[in-house]
Length: 133
Image (cartoon, rainbow, N blue to C red; front, side, top):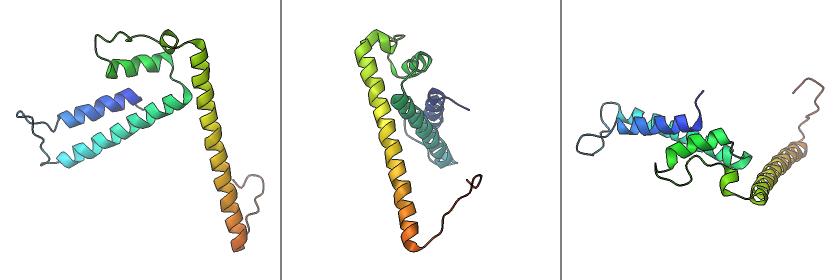
């Protein structure tokens, strides 16, 4: 299994395979497959980054992502959240992530309740016994 930054690097690598010496892109000879594979890796990298943003990024993850996106002379390189945020800001960020997750859970529960109600209205039986799910 790859990490988000590994997916990001692979997407970039696949796309550079399509660049000709003159800087133009080559889509012949299977180039579409490279683009499709790069898109998959880019999507997985985005999913990983999004998940980290909503759950809180750890120091190891921060360092790996920073190495990808920060310029070599970036003054924040190697810093952690605690280096650039106050304890109150970190707590607020974590509370926001928890509130977001709570909202997602509520939306999921509401959608499931609405689906059950729709099935009830349609006359479907959905009695479950232990172990059925």
